Image 1 (cartoon, rainbow, N blue to C red):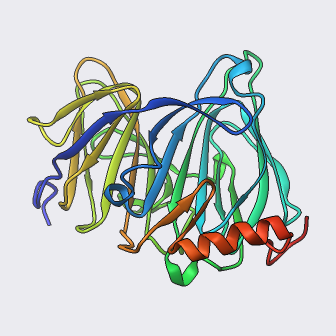
Image 2: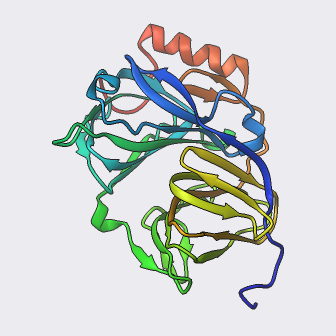
Image 3: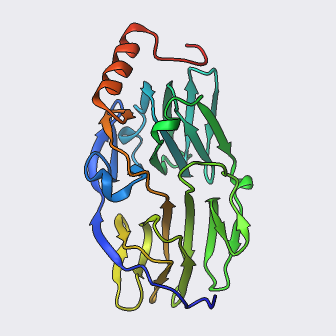
Length: 291
């Protein structure tokens, strides 16, 4: 099919991330979450935790539970030290990513550390699990920067591929039920990035550097902290003017299932939520691993 064939995805919804406080006192910007969950299905939440003030992030996210979801952390600057009820511990740094499947239950902590200049930056995305997989065994996929392929497209864009495929190059995260695509896209000035998307999949972009126009020449301009959710279609185009732009591009297959959500646990029914928190209080939350 010719590169320009197909139906262009237009901007369906536009917003900017909003300040919030999470964990033990981490100041961050929330792009979406705890709101219109249907709009972004299968994704639940996207947090932007970029900061150059250690007092706004060092308190971190002490021990807390997750069940029924996957959390995907992508680091730009600084590092995050982590430990969990499976006995895993380590750190992810600039350019690294971590794809954690909480499944039946995991208790972990994430503690941000700045670089030598006190800068900390990255994103955390929550992706839902279908009812049939919510109680699967927990697992981690730690991805060092060198494991994440980066390519220059025919359009001249530089793309890091955490998950999905761009011009024949596939990212290292595969075999995920929502068939996701997670790209870090940098478009140079006076350029256009065009990318095929799967019809029926949810597609959104979050800008974190520069400015670009999304959804064709008649589309919407967006800059740092702006979020764009797209209508259905099989391709997306992004163009830049005199300055470059960099953004996250996320795609995934909607689950279309009911959501029962409270804090770090996302199930399908209120009864399942009740059981999860009851097990947490009783010490029977963890089904695999140890404390």
